Length: 77
Image (cartoon, rainbow, N blue to C red):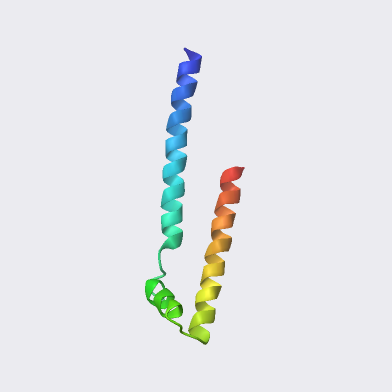
């Protein structure tokens, strides 16, 4: 009986963790909105924009990558 309960609890916990990761990654991938960054700036950078807007986009991308790495380290503990 204990094994069955353990299996059920593991399945529930696994689904909750997966849902949490999906929501967290969705939150990280959204644009800032108020700063005017997001898909517009990324589209301009991909189209060949140079100068401060491209370096700002690179900085934001690096920041999001660091945040994602931080989240995955926390989940691993």
